[in-house]
Image 1: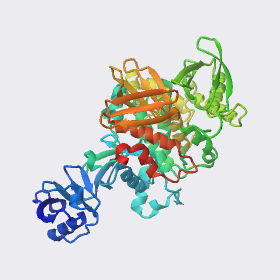
Image 2: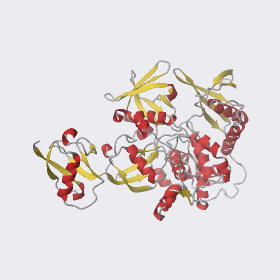
Image 3: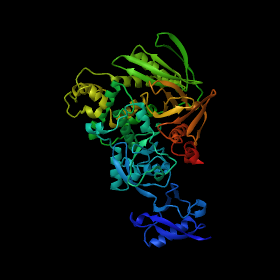
Length: 586
């Protein structure tokens, strides 16, 4: 074949160096091109991490046995020869920024896997532009512990220092730091933030991420069913930090009482951290581990059992006696304000056309605890005869007790305790609404109910309350449904999709994943189409995000539903990519 000139820019020669010109033929394979480059540069070094990047096509030429003709490369191709691993600034949930070498040629999925192996292998993480870098990961195996830490962190003093940096909760942020952070003012603002996740099927360089760019590592899929404090200190700490910032920046809504309780727990965690810097599982915490894990679960239990139905009699909001069947598939959420004596239970009951929303009003705290426990058991396919019924009631009562204010003394934390900076413990909205002298006693009152908790138990309790918030786990996207003339909001949750009216914020319809028969994407017009049981079909295009992001969320959560604690030590990467990759997985 006739020879022709191919120009390649070699990054190691410097930004001002001219491209290297090679005489090649179309039947020359990529490996041969690399060999010619190395010989012509006359630089002696390890070139094993280098590869060719095709600028016009935005792709790496990683198949070194392929010829230039097979790739479709001609003389006008703009090629770069550079390392596949480059420095990246990684901002963690606790605000610490690490500078590390990450792979720019693998799909983001694999890049995050590599990063998280270095960071004690956390799960369910991903990456995002300036705001997130995210993906799904899992433990390859339960780590062996050495001196209370995963053994691979004990290899050197440097690794041990990294472990301590990752596993210690940060003190409450300074008020000016909180004030400078971007806070979403509406669900549309949240949708713009949630639309910045990186595509897990493409590499960093394909998505505009350059060397030394800053990306954020965040938990993306909210399905935390295998957290064990003894082994997962790093993951538990980073999850707490992400939850805390979500509360402070109002990315998730909560009541005023819940905000005071979150503030009290932050104060307590910060205080205990000074004497108990690392989370260790006490005997009491280990004894209560199973209930703690259950409280953190998002994935519904009892999926393999038949729907054990439970008859529940209740009074509706209109004080009308009603009877309904509560079964596996129902969703239960609290709507409580202890100070105002408001005890509501929000139920989402599956129906062919979506989900029906029902509110139960309880007359008092005792009735609420019993009914809430009954509803939770019923939604998991259990009856009132289940042995966990009384434990569930007690857990709910403990949660209510933490929201009560104490009119007595503040014990070892007097009202004039200068270490309490309310500007760092509650969101800016409440700092504007109340003065410090009004917030301090309320936070201290809530603090009395958590003051005896260990560091681990306090963090677990914080996450438990965070997970019980109605909007927990929701990611928003502004969409345009097929046949509609107006934009609406789609909420993507771990087990359902929610259609929200953009004007008033009301939930219009809910569809559960377990009622989904199939979904597909028309990549030409960027439209998702989903078919549910009962001949229910929906289709929509995305306004504030690429449709691949929604497709990846749906596929990711469906993938999560196929996993269990017993199988959590293995990761079926091929299945995950098939469910989330779309046309890029073909």
